[in-house]
Image 1 (cartoon, helix red, strand yellow):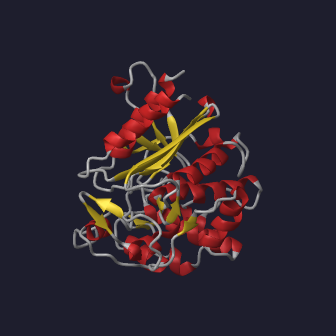
Image 2: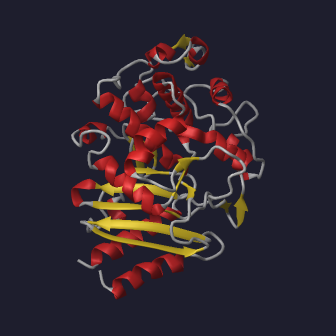
Length: 350
């Protein structure tokens, strides 16, 4: 890649910063071995940031590894790993208790029907997400997150064909299952099974409200310091990383570092969650509608993104990988729009 091409990509990042919707960006792209990274606005090189729900890929990597090693099966019922108190009332639908039918696969694929403790509204018509956006920071435990979910009505019977509902509760449960299975905390599992093996230096699970290293996320035109919440998300959204280290991770995820590459094909069981994003088993798919991509320049991407504007996606067949953030939760499509422009420009050079 020559200097003019690098300048063009950097220019896209610079233009994205308008100090109204976007105050800083950080992205890495790799295509067939050619790597580029850039930052703009209030981001510097290797600035740590919250990757939010992209964290779920870490959880997926570990469970797919356990499955591949025969430690567990994705068809295992979750009651095999959780205590009775946690299971009681977790899924009571139309007068019947379906908790005993929920599998690990249901949790990974968001096909459990369990409500989302974070985005779904409580009996007062208020969601935890809305409270946080209003500046009301708060913290919670695993038990409190699950209890909040239990007070909401499940969406459907677990495993109902064609049904999916994105729920952070699913990954709270997976985190607890991981801890019960290994007798290690989620943070320790991330460290031992992902962070240390990959040699990541700036990636960790956020746990202390006194940790001011990650950039505060923006909500519209203001910073939204919510350390209590960020220290509570854990397995559903609490990892801190950088774009360059997420590039190492996303390549490893799809290139056989954690589980055989052959496993990927079986994860591609797609159900709609947020158009045009669909959920598979532990992964998401982003594919532009034909109307906006008639020439097919932007390929299908699989990976995950987060409410913070963070993302880590790939098209392994084309050896294309992209990671980054716009660090803004008010406009969830901003990171995708920027990623599309970067990919289009990056592919143009060939």
